Image (cartoon, rainbow over all chains, first blue to last red; front, side):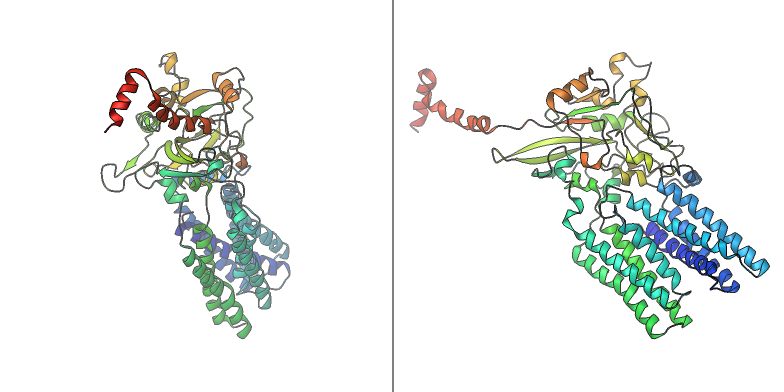
Length: 290
Length: 247
């Protein structure tokens, strides 16, 4: 799939923002956070999730109908994502206002924020995980890497050693995701044979492309990334998303300025991971161009 | 709106005969022409007469070669690819705006362009690459099964078929109701074993394909031996053969 920067930034930044909101909500529920921190970090979470959502808006080819995306929550994960994110952000704004004015908080609102914000990240991941056309996405590892990338990123400023645990879980799911995506069984049923109505192992090749230049399908869904580069990018992603952040947290626990560096490194790593998520994904339409 | 209807009445679709298709792209051209001459709704082209032209099409014809395992010979065939108007159309359920829908009365899958926001998710959800985003209007385009022809009172009855069917010079494309066991398309599917594309995707396509007939070893072998047997000819041909063999 074409790794469009607007979509990668959307999933990385809105995930990070909603991750912060989830962690603030959790700490608020557990009474482990000050009112000042609620206001500041909710604001940071709000900022990143809105930047992410604006970025996704730039992916739309017909922006004037964007508001209609809130109408089909019964069947569409993208619609659920739109509704859930707006609903969640409204509660965040309400919570910030309440805490700012009264200088105290309702801890029960925290658990609502935690659940709703995590659900929003889940809906984002399901936009991709629901697609049978892309088997490497069509499994529960996709929600796992989206949710734990967000929670790990969101926890770096707010938690000390707990963020190490979240980073570790994210790292394990990420490696599992790459491992699964590499397996030959990922397209266990589909081939150029079944795409054309024959049996799976039929020996068929395209001898002439159906059109004289690239088209929307090829630009959008038949993206080729060199395997040797993909492996290198995985190492870069793994190092900057997990290894460097975990080492820095262990060496400088509770150091705020180091935390900023940790977040920067982590987000760069998640960006590379998301770039690969798209670039390495093979869509079934590519069989017609084999 | 994006909930899929039952479609118990009619299931309109196309039956495409790969044994008959000669890959002339006539259906592609007539489809583009018909769907670009209806006023506002165009299938746009960019750089159509310059370098790197890009255009929106609802139908594409691919060319393949296939190894015949019986004869060890390579056979070629052509493959028109367009929307299959699936019963479980994943492109409809993923749509966030309700622009994508499947008609209950005849099962045709359509896009309401006034609601489409051009996110492209339906094109990702379609296994067959049947949807293309129009880069000029910013909305998703797909085969309408010529819904503006098949019910048109302005056209004479024999023209009330999709334009790709009407224009196909070899009659490789047929249009009909797959829900009616007595329709021509249903009978042909039964008689010649019509198949689904990527049945494993569980989309239940309405459109069916008839695969190319496979040439048998005996037949392919006999083509060579006919030529050799000519050397045993008698009479005038035998005289010509003997005369030519002297050189």
